[in-house]
Length: 132
Image (cartoon, rainbow, N blue to C red):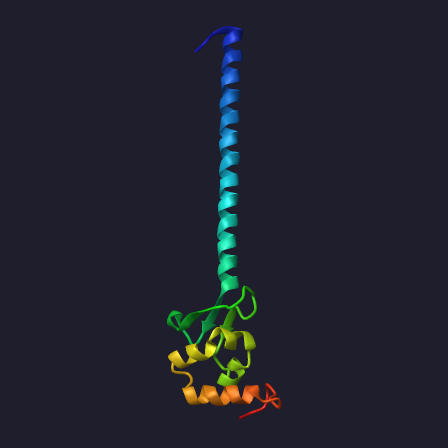
């Protein structure tokens, strides 16, 4: 320790200098954290824009990912529970991205049923609420 007035002034400068360094470190850490959170948020948004999350039943094993043909938030999370295959295939965005193949892989629809539904959808007289 340095004694006297000069000593206290010197110690005060050192303390002030160390405080400034500590503040700079804290500011840098918060900017790093902000930047990290921004990157994580961007990755999550990019994922949500690029994939449909299809829920085919209960449980984690019944959640499937379907790549989107265009980046959009349309039908990002879609549940097939309680919906007919015709209703599911009537969604153009999902149909174009391959929901029919996913339903067939899951055993929820046959090739013949898909062909019949696509034929009905192709007709001009189709209404989304009409029964088979």
